[in-house]
Image (cartoon, rainbow, N blue to C red; front, top):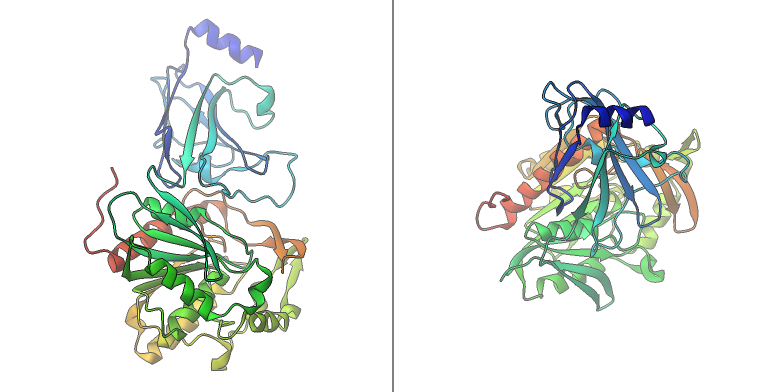
Length: 433
C-alpha cells in the first residue's frame, strides 16, 4: 500500500469519485465514475455497509482505467472481485458479509424511517481482502431509502389486525396494495414503503407472529383489506393483493374464496396454490407437518422444495385458482430450493386453462433465480438463517445464482410496478424524473 500511495504522489494526481445520486430510493440505479487516474491504472471500487444487526457487508470490483484515466462503472468491465463484467449495480447486489462474520446472515431493512448508508471507496491496485487495514484514495457516502420524501407511515392496531400503512405524498386518493410476506413471520415493512414511494397506498400486514396466529383465517385478511379500503386516501375499488412465499398462498386463497375482497389484480412471488388457507392457520400447520418427512438436508442446509411434491391431484389439497376472476401475475425462479414454484405455476396454468381463465394469468419464469425475489439490488442470499415455527433456527437453502437472481429482481420489480399501474391506475404512469 505504501508503494501505491507513493505512485499516486509522484504522478501528482488526486482521484475524483462521482456517485449519483448520493440520496435516492433503493431501486434507483447509481452512476459511478472515477476520474483523474493514471492511464491503465488498476483500481478497486469497494462498497461497505454496516447493517442494523451490526454486521459489515462488502462488495468490490477490479477495474483498469482507460487512456484518459477514467473508470465508468456503467460501461467498463470489472475483471475480478465479487462480480465481473459490465454491471452498473453490482456493488449493491453482490454485497456479502465480510470474512469472519456470523453465518447465515441476510441483509434486510428494519427501520424504514432511516436510510441504508453505504461507503463507496476507490483503492489503488486490485485488492481482495483486508480493506479495513488500508486507506482508500477517495470515499463517498451515499444514502439509499425505501421511503421517498413525504411518504407517511401509520401504525395499524385495529379490529384485531396488526400492520403498517404507508401513504404516498400528494392529495390522493390512491390505489392500494395489501402486502403479505411469508412463513418467517413478523412485520416486514420495506417493500410496502417502497410501493408507497411509487404512488400506491401499501398495507404491510402482520399475520404469523402473534400467539393467536394459529386461529387466523380468511376473515382476518378480509378485515385488513376493509380497514385499508376505508382509509380516506384509498380508492376502495382499486385494490391489489401481493404476497411472497406463504404470503402468495394467502393471496390465492383470499382471491379465490373470499366473498368480501374483490381485488383488481393479484401478484404472487415464489408462491404455490398448494396448502390453501380456508379455515384456520392451524389446519395449514397440520398439513405441512404431515409433509415434513420430505424435507432434505444437504451440507447442513435445509431444503423444503420437495415438501409439496408431487403436486396434489386432489382438488381440496390446493386453491382452486380457476375461481379467481382478476388478472394474476406469478413470479417464479427456476432454481427455487424452498418451494416447488415452477411445478405449481404449471399446475395453476392447467387449472386456469380448464376454467377458461387462462387469459387472466401471466407467468414470469427466471432462469437461475432462487426463492427470495425481492426489490432490485437487494443482495442475493442463496441460504440464510430461518426460524422454523418460531422455535428452531436452521440454515434454509433458498437457491439462486447471484447474477441471474439479481437480474430477476430488477426485471420482475419493473414488471410488478407496470402490472399494478396497468390494473389499478386511471392513466399510464409518469416516467420517473
